[in-house]
Image 1 (cartoon, rainbow, N blue to C red):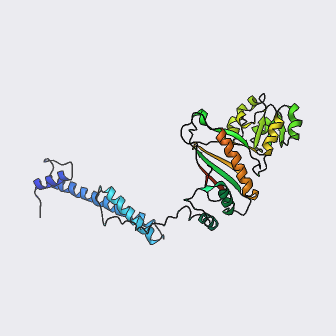
Image 2: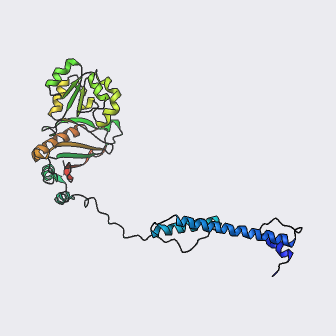
Image 3: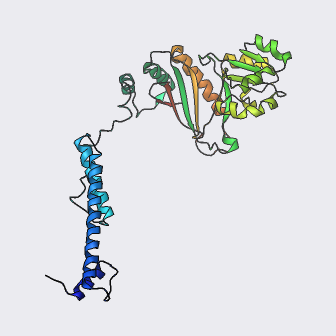
Length: 331
C-alpha cells in the first residue's frame, strides 16, 4: 500500500530523520529505507558480536559456555538500551544443611576431655584437693608447669592498684632461669660467683642492639639503669626491663642474682585485673606446689592496696599448662 506524503513525513519524524515538506516523496522514501538499513546493520553487528563472544568460550565446559551466552545476551540488551528483566528469575543457589558447630570442649583432645570429666565445675576445692587434682588431670606427657590465675578486685589503671611485686617461692619454679647482669666491671666477679649466666658492661648494649635477648631476668645497678632507657621498647613488652619493685635494680647485684636463681619471681596484674604465675612443675608433687602457692598468696595479700574497697581476691584457679582449670578456695 502506497503511503501519502503526510504519512511518510510522520514516519520520518518518528525516526528522527532530517526531512521536510520541501522534500519529494521519493526523497523521503529513500531516507526511510537508508535509516532502516542502518538499523539492520547494527542488529547484525550486535548478533555477530554475541556469537563471537560465545565462540570465544571455545571448548570449555557446558557451564562456561552457558555463562558466556548469558553474558553476551546481557551485553546485547544493554547495547540496545533494554534494561528490563529478561527470562526466568535468577536461580538461587540451594544451601545445604548448616554445619554442626562443636563446642570448645568437643574440639579438645580426648585426653583433655577425660581430664575435664574428673573435675566438678560446680565445686570449689580446697588448696590440697586442687593441687592433687591438677596433677591427676595433667593431659601432657611432659613435666608440665602448674599455674595460678587470680582475679583481683582492683583497677589496674589506678597507679596504687597496679599490683607489681616479687615473691621467693620456697621450692622455686622448676625452670632454669637465665640471669643477665649489666654492671661495672668491679661487680663482675661477685655476680659470676652468685650464678649469673651473662655478666657484661658496655658490650651488653651491643647485644641488645642486635636484638639478642638470651636471658629471663636482667639485673643492673642504679648508675647503669639510664643506659637501658633507649631499649625500653625492646625490653619492656617482654617483662625484661629492670625495675626497683622487682628487685632487679640493685646496688648489691650478687644478692639480687642469688635471689633470682633461688626462685624469686615477679608477678603483676594484667589489664583484665588477673595475676598469672607459674608455681612449679607436676614433678614437684602436691605438697611442694601447695607451699609455693601459699607463699604467693601471702605476698599478694601483703600488697593489697589501702584504697581498695570491696573484695581483693575475687577468684582463684589452678591448672597445668595444658590441663583444665580448677577453682580454689583459699579462705
